[in-house]
Length: 119
Image (cartoon, one colour):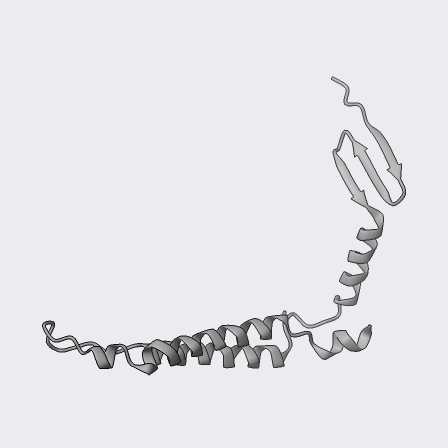
């Protein structure tokens, strides 16, 4: 059985039927240029500053969970409401966890200075 192949080009778009390939040459050029610019960088995804901020964020999250822990009782018949529902466990610890997540997200989105200077 013979497979018919035909090509259609409109502007920067190119469609090849038979191999079912659709491509945009302008986008491909941009991707190639971006890959070429990042070719000579080291193997790390982020810069050292990003990793430091990430570790600070993880430490804040861990501190929040440590502050949230505890409050148990030796005797299962005794319920210490003041200790369990204290400001530290209800307000401070969850706020620390959310701040830690915010710091971690900031460290991921922070652009390194070398990318900004190339533009």
